[in-house]
Image 1 (tube, rainbow over the protein chains, first blue to last red):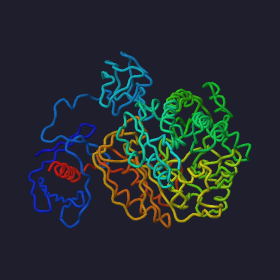
Image 2 (cartoon, rainbow over the protein chains, first blue to last red):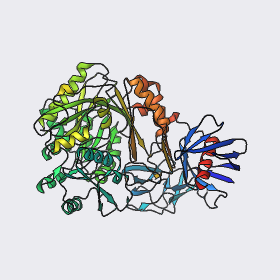
Image 3 (cartoon, each protein chain N blue to C red):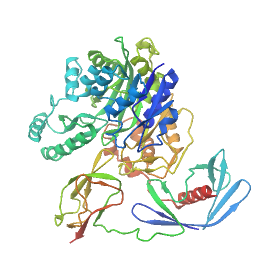
Image 4 (tube, chains in turn orange, blue):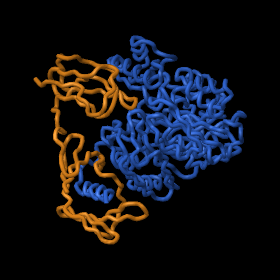
Length: 160
Length: 472
C-alpha cells in the first residue's frame, strides 16, 4: 500500500507499506527497509523498532491530517488526487479561514513583491496578505466583509 | 448551595466547574450551536443551550444570557476570562437582577477596566505609571503630536484591550500613521470599542504581575508575583512564578507586591485579580493595568502557594471565609512554569486551525495539564488558538524546567500544528535556562529559527502504522 503525505507547500512524501504481519500481541509493519512493531496496551497504542524500546503513538483515523515536527500533512492512501497542485507564485490563496477587513488594491493595479494586497482577520488577529511576485492584479475575487474558507483563491497577480 | 452559570468555554470553563463541584455548588455549563460537543460539559452538573454560533450571538450576548439565568433559576455567574469577564455593564445588569457576579464589584471593574481611568487611580494611590496620554486619543494627528512629545518608541493601545490584542509599538511618526487605523479596527472587532491610548514603550522590559485575592470585608492579600516576559505578538506563551528576574531580591518582591495591594485597596477590590507591571533592567517598575478577572496563568500561583484561586474567588463572591486567615499564611514553596499550548505554526507563530486527529499524554510527576482536548476536537478560527496549559512544579526552577521539558516530550497532539516544538526550543535554550530574558526574547533570540523542520520518513512510517492499526 502506498501512502502520500502532502504538506502545505504541496510537496509530497511517499511511504510504501509492503507487508503487515500479525502475531498474538504484536502487529508488525514492514516498509522498504525498516519494520515498525506496534502493540496495544490498556487501550493505548505503542510502537517499537526493536521490540525492546517502546514509545506511545497517537491513535489516528485513516485519511486524516497528521502532524510531524512543524509540518502538517494531508494523507492520501493508495492514490494522489489530481487537481491538488494548482496555483503558481502569483496566486493568493487563503491559508486559513478568515474575514476580509481591508482591500488595498483593485483589479488592474500594479503591485510590487511584498506589497500588502489585503488584510484578512482570523482568530481576532489581522494578517497582511502580501504579493508573492511583482505584477498586475487580475481576477480580484473578494471584497470587504467577505468570510473565506481555507484554500480559496483571493486574487491572481500576472507576473511582468 | 448555589446554582452557578459558567459563561465561558474551553479549559477555563472546566477549571471553574471543578471548583464549583468541589465547593458543593451546582455547575451549569453552556453549549452553543457551533460547539455542540463542548468538552467542558463533561465537568458540569447541568447543561444549558445558548442559541447561536458567533461569540456576539452567544458568549457576548447579555440579554440571551440573562434569559438563561431566569429560565434556569441561576444564583450566580462565573465569567471565566475574556468574553464578559471585565464587562461592567454585565456585572451591573446581574446586580440589578439579584444575581451574584463572581468577580469584583462593578465600581472596581469600571475603575480598572479602562486603561486611561486605571492609570489615574494608580497615580492617586501613589503607584508609579508609564508616561503617556491621560485619556483616549481621538485622531491620528493628536496621536502624532503626543508621541513626538513623549519620545519614541511609543505604544498604541486599545482603551478596552487586554490579552495583548489591539496594541502595536511605533518607532517613528510614520509607524504611528500606519498603525493607528489598524489598531482601531482590531479594537473595534475584538472589544467593540475603537478608543486608543498612547504611551512610552519601556525598553528591555520584564512583564511582572502580582496576584491579588480580596474578600468582601476589605481584606486584600497578595499571592506573590509571576513573570510573563516570554511573549509573541504581545501575548504570553510561557509564565513562571516566582519571577527569575526578581530572583532572591526579597526587598523588591515585597515592594512590588505591596504596591499592588495598595492599588487594589484604593479601588475597593474584592475578588481575584492581577496587577500588571512593566519592570526595566534598572528594577524600576511601572503599573500597566489591572485585570479584574481570573487569569490564564493563575495555575502557577496556585502551584507555588497551594491556594486554590478559583475556589477562593467563588468563596469571596458569596461572602464566605477564605481558606487562609492572614498574609503570613501565604508563602512561596518551590517554582512553577506554565507553557501555553496553542494551535499555531511553531515557526511563523500564526494561528493554525484544524482538527485533533490523535492526542496522548505521558507526564512526569508534578505535572498539571489544564486543557479541553479530545480526539476529533475541531479548533476553529472563531476562538483563541490556546487549547491547553502545561504546568510543571518543582522544588527549584531547575527542577521545574527539567519536568517541563520531559512533559513537552510526553505531550502528543496529532492532526494540526501546535507550538509544542517551539516551546521545547525555548525551555531548553541557554538564556531561558539562565533566567535572563525580557519581553523581547522571541524577537531577539529567535527560538523559532531553531525549530526542527526536517521531515523524517521514520515519523511518517509511525503515522502509517497508527492509521492501519485504527482500520484493523
